[in-house]
Length: 268
Picture 1 (cartoon, rainbow, N blue to C red):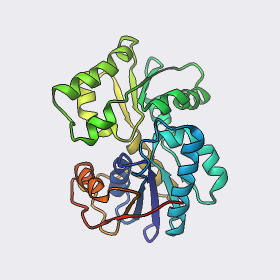
Picture 2: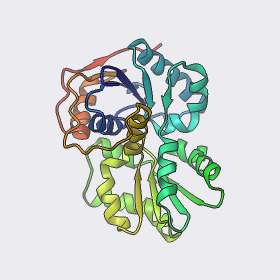
Picture 3: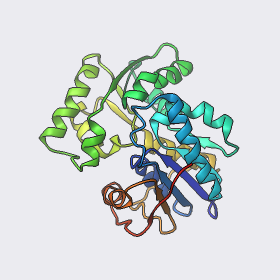
């Protein structure tokens, strides 16, 4: 796919962690990113609304001649992926299954924790996917509504962030989980804090990393490469509102300036 394009769709900025990982693993591929920033968050909306908005976003990416679309939003993957796959002719890659597969490969006691948005957790999507693969595994879930706002405000460390993260993790750790799925693409931004609080005995599953590995595998090049930069000079970024704010947060997520590369569109 060195001369092709990949689309990444997200409800906002969280999918930039997926963008970063795909850019690292597939540096020759152009990425077209769409964040529906006018209607974020999706995590508090109904499945019908999430599906409607997502179809509009995917059709826009399809019009940009991408060959594959990553549904980078865990909420969309949880609530709407099946419906989207029936509507779209392009191949879609969601974030749930790659993360679930990785968690199953890591767990030792068969007790997996999942943290995510309210909609993702309420959908029980990770539970269903994991149970389909291994019915004996125990899955414990916890919604973390304060994490996304903290991350988007740049509070990636510090006492407040640590207290909030610990508040969410403590009940799961008391249940002796040995593997934790970061079931929201924002959460890799506070991965270091989470790992420090859980300790090395609990293995973290970064859904952004796992979906990037799946995309690379689907492209026919499963070998893993390491990289030091996610800079993608040909990338295009589209949002439905507040391109300047997206650029500011994007710099924090990606580590470089994307001012002037973000365009505002209207989805219909």
